[in-house]
Length: 89
Image 1: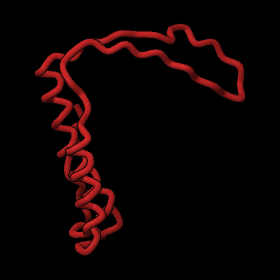
Image 2 (image 1 turned 135 degrees about the vertical axis):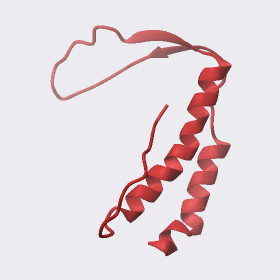
Image 3 (image 1 turned 90 degrees about the vertical axis):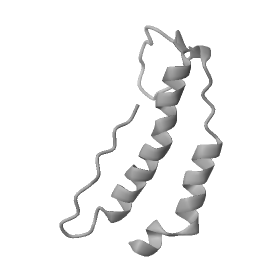
């Protein structure tokens, strides 16, 4: 487990997430196109939301939360393992 936690691959993954954080303050328009083998009707396929700089700062905290979650997953099979809380924003 310690080897996995210290691995270059894990470090590279977490570093890539930090560098590729794309959210910026502003308005976002989202249009959903879904498909399924089962017939369904999508009631609302388009929506808009705004992110403030405070929202973006909170979302950026998820980069560190990902690190905690990855550590929890890697160590989850250890006896008596107690997962650290992962609070997503």
